[in-house]
Image (tube, rainbow over all chains, first blue to last red):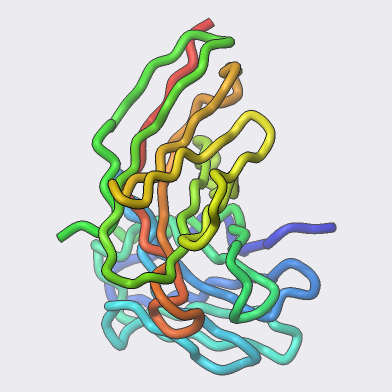
Length: 113
Length: 118
């Protein structure tokens, strides 16, 4: 079975631009979470979606938004990019809201110049 | 206060030896879960092992075992018979409380970089 997939792999943007990152969960997984990992740190939780509804939000500004589609794939959108948004963005999926283990994708590395 | 503390920024181990990576956690919630993930230089977080707060026995998965000491709030990862491919960053993480909401997701430590020497 295919794992979590993310696109694109790498992305370079300039300050003030907008970016959309995409994630496809493992087949049968209905919950998707997004994490931001800046260099030298552990990942930080941004959003969780389950059955197309937002079920959790971390401490991130409103410039960050996300959605989940009927096929359970998800998009993370970031507006008005700042230099500090440069990071590895990880998507994780799990079967249900009540499943313990999350499985991560390979990430999208975003560089903001 | 940090929820997850990994005090070893870097560790070296000889190939075929065992190594212990330290993790302490802080929570007042009686229900929580503890995880270890491996992150190679490629960036993907690979799930290794899970321990629930109510589990009576320490979790094991192949060469990985979790030394869970609830009273000390520690959840150390033990890797037996280290291999060169074990060289990577290792992250300890915790899920607090009930599922769903912000608490249903993971809080990570800063990680430990493990280097396996031939």
